[in-house]
Image (tube, rainbow, N blue to C red; front, side, top):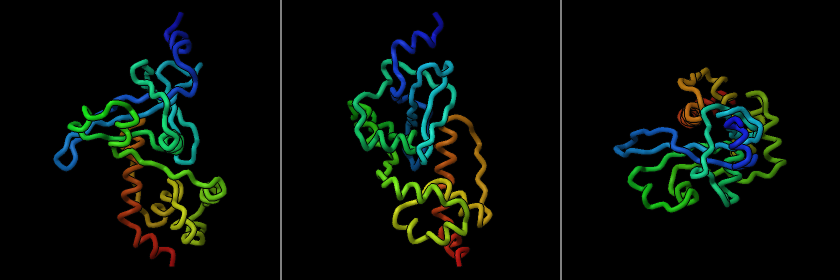
Length: 195
């Protein structure tokens, strides 16, 4: 019996796991990075899944489910956020011993909670495909939020390029954070480009 067949009997599609994915030092504090992934039966060995901000399933490798890292009874707000792009977070090392569950760990971290957006709003935001459409819907975007596609359209318009320097789930998380930070820093230039 191969390893994956054994895992398939132990876990089921849709099970979500949390694992330590790295460390970083920010503002004088040591932080542990955590990542989440979803298990799928019949996936390749080491293949895990997470979601884009638009809710699209994305696969990656080096995801190993373990009994001790399964996240059960996931609160609705955390599950919704995970299924809309929040799959990595960090926690101050000194705070980790205070938490007794994954739920507490996430609530004490920098996890990005996503609002449960009305499907009509989400569809309208997802249908924006050009900077001209961003410009024409700017008031709507400011009221209801934006997604990574809109951020990319805006940064492309003003000529800001951010190259990913790593692969895997942690690299994608860092890349996404860099794009968001570039958007925040350049918001005045982006708004000026709309005039």
